Image (cartoon, rainbow, N blue to C red; front, top):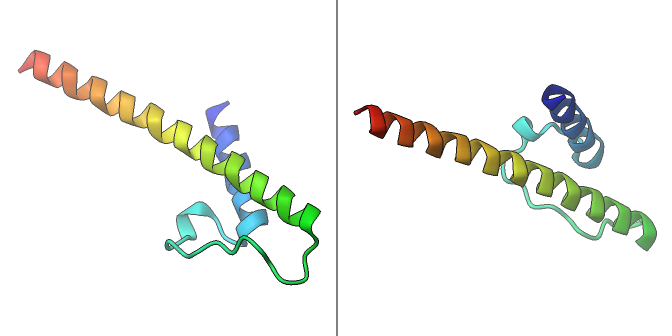
Length: 77
């Protein structure tokens, strides 16, 4: 299930940004693309927000896992 979520997130990034998340180099995101109607811009911005929130949740889970591992190592030590 997690692998499917990662694949969907990667495909969404590819559709929205033209690159996979691993390919991005902290490039600025243009919120208003010239020639795109406001409804399309809103959908794109909402999709980017959803994607960012999903990535945020994944990072939080990974951080909690690392903290737990650190506590376990300290306990063993």
